[in-house]
Amino acid sequence: GAVVSQHPSWVICKSGTSVKIECRSLDFQATTMFWYRQFPKQSLMLMATSNEGSKATYEQGVEKDKFLINHASLTLSTLTVTSAHPEDSSFYICSASGWVSTDTQYFGPGTRLTVL
Amino acid sequence: RKEVEQDPGPFNVPEGATVAFNCTYSNSASQSFFWYRQDCRKEPKLLMSVYSSGNEDGRFTAQLNRASQYISLLIRDSKLSDSATYLCVVSLGSGKSTFGDGTTLTVKP
Image 1 (cartoon, one colour):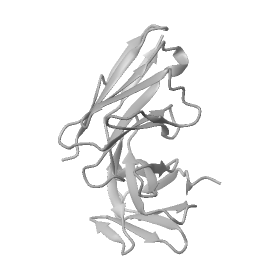
Image 2: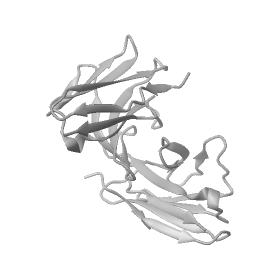
Image 3: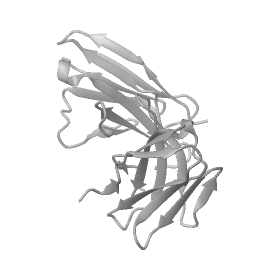
């Protein structure tokens, strides 16, 4: 149980394009989904927290107009990086909670984004 | 002061060694505690939850000391495959968790 998938696993795009990343909880309904970013050899950085049917809560310093989050159902959340630039290149990881408790997070395999 | 602090290491130990990691947290209202492991270029994976009574899973033992606000993870008989970064995670019970920066362990033959 508690399987979280992410798609795509990696993506390379040109500067200025938008990239959508999907996060799905495959075998449970996720009350909350989280989006993180991690640069090489650095710690996880929480970008935003989203609950199904409501607006995401963004962490300080994260531009909500650049990182659009949609949490349309209890099993799907999407992160769209709009007008991506090379500095957005990073490892984006989602997690979902709600299988065991609201506090136990299960992570997707991550999406490696490279913006040329 | 960070909400969750870990010794970044790296810890370099030989196979078979016992190694312990500590993690301190600043918010006394914290309710849930976890250890995750993260391999290089992979996502974090839940290793174990940490309870006040302490819990053990094979070679791994986790302890929680609420009075001193620290959590520990003990790994016995280290294996090469234990090499990873170990993340301490603390939650207030509201669904949002705070991650430590991680402690890197390298087990050498």
